[in-house]
Length: 183
Image 1: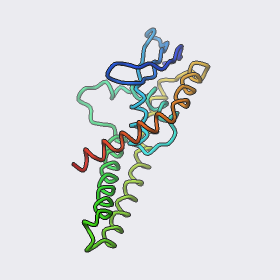
Image 2: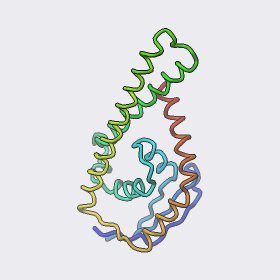
Image 3: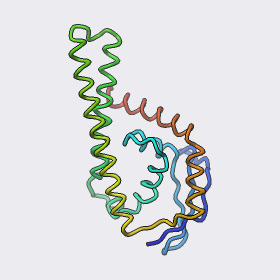
Image 4: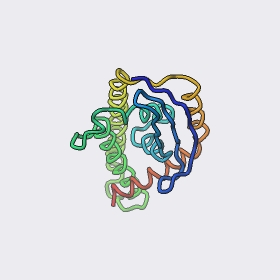
């Protein structure tokens, strides 16, 4: 299936906030894809990715996966790994906060070492999650191609122009996720 991006804009969608409004031409006709900026930021944080264009590529292809439309399908391997990494990272952040507050002083050195190991495991899981996500998207790309033309270039430019706002959204997501995991 060949997809061509025919329009891209930034809109403020009620309940979603700033979004990329992407008009695409597919064999089925004209399609509208609304991608919240916060979703790009969340994926960047979840997978430990610093390139919003990479996440954009994942998002443009990811929703076309046959598994994404199956209501009873298991979560993607990449999402499971990324979630495990976030849980480990949140535990380490919580532990460091407790150390900083002086609440774990009896074994501070040992606990700090353990937290370093948890951080290392979170990093390892994020690397595995990124590899898995890249493989999932590569499988989709075998059946779906998005024209690398002016439409896609315009969309990439919009995302890159938002990089500071995406970073702010990413920090907000990190704080909310850590609070939810450690609550």
